[in-house]
Image 1: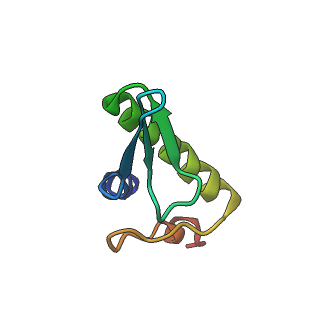
Image 2 (image 1 turned 90 degrees about the vertical axis):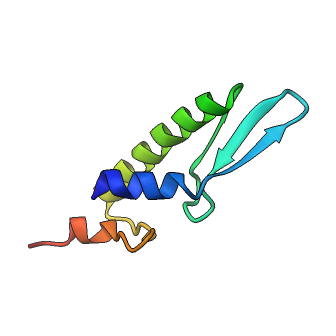
Amino acid sequence: MLASYIDQAMKLVVYEIIEDDETYWGEIPPLQGVWACHQSLEGCRRELREVLSDWLALRLRLGLMIPAISGINLNKLTEPV
């Protein structure tokens, strides 16, 4: 479920080229604070996936809400069984 969430979230990435220093900026708008910047598009994509993984791990650990993406609701992972 977690891998599917990450894959779906990565489909929502918005990239920009920062022309001043020719770097790539990427963010996932529905997920506040999930962004990355790198000299190459592929590097930006890799860093963004890592940031997303860390962001999810922290929110799950702290019990903070995570927006559902493509019908995947990770908040159910923290509910007691």
